[in-house]
Length: 109
Length: 116
Image (tube, rainbow over all chains, first blue to last red; front, side, top):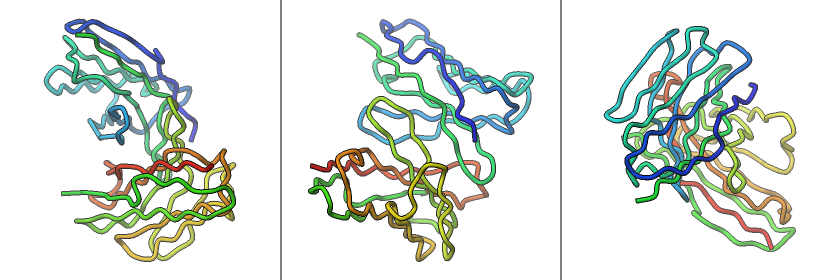
């Protein structure tokens, strides 16, 4: 599967600021998943979106799947230092998961 | 539930030697396991898909004779890096699915391989 591009590659915010990462595909995706990888750790599943225009929330995290199912976003409200890590989107198809390029988030206290 | 373990967590070896990495699903049966490689500050790249009892399916550009994958049971898959070279140094992560289809993959903690 084609790798999905994420922007930005890296973002450094002050604690309390908001953060958004965007995931863009040139082709329609059947679903989008989001993972968080802490430094030195392994990816941890956050959520899956499957419907066009779907929006899901997990506390300070808001996930959206675009109407055309070609893009997605993850928004974190009022970041905390515990939000530090790399956020990957990914999509499954043909029995495999393909990760996006990732966005590395650094949060300063 | 849904815990995946990997062993070893890190390994240092000399160039030319072979290294075996084990991936185990501890509390569920994993019909499919996946092996990824991650270089520093890069994304995870899928190397191969391993189905229990059958040959692994390798991604384009991954040498199947160099990265031997065996999925002998529903709870164990192994990746052997044969004749390792310094450029094989990387973070190798396995994942497993098998619960309610494919919607979520559970990742092992990873194995950091350093080839001298």
